[in-house]
Length: 198
Image (cartoon, rainbow, N blue to C red; front, top):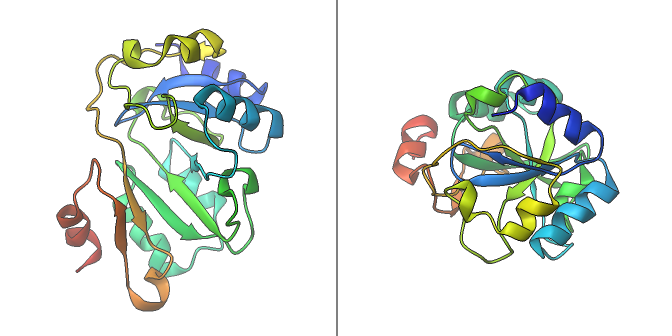
């Protein structure tokens, strides 16, 4: 696998990369580049108003980039991440609006456990490496050829677990301790409850 430095170079230059997460293969680009985001969405055939997640490859970098997070929520993230969850958070400062779609007040955050990319220091906009509505890619060969051929970098991480991340809503966690699973995935609700409480 090409190292983290090569991945960073491609993203920083406005490219789109296919990469292995800890769940399924994904697509990544600069979350602040309108051109790169539009290209990633076009590769997938994803509607432009559908939100994506911002991914960090290091939990400390993610928490450091969101100093406005209230303490209870920040503590929950420190216990949940890295791992196979995409967390919806309040986005009071309107960060990474290109990833937020029609709801700039909500940010999707993902920190996977990918040792080969742990040194990547910049955030990326990420989505699964498939055509919109198509099956998730467990192997690089499962990524549609048209996406692989058009990407600027393709990283092969071998066979992955194949179950996408669990989508977890923490927008009311600070005020009420409330959380809910919006999409079942790699981490079960029971496992989340052992971390956050029922």
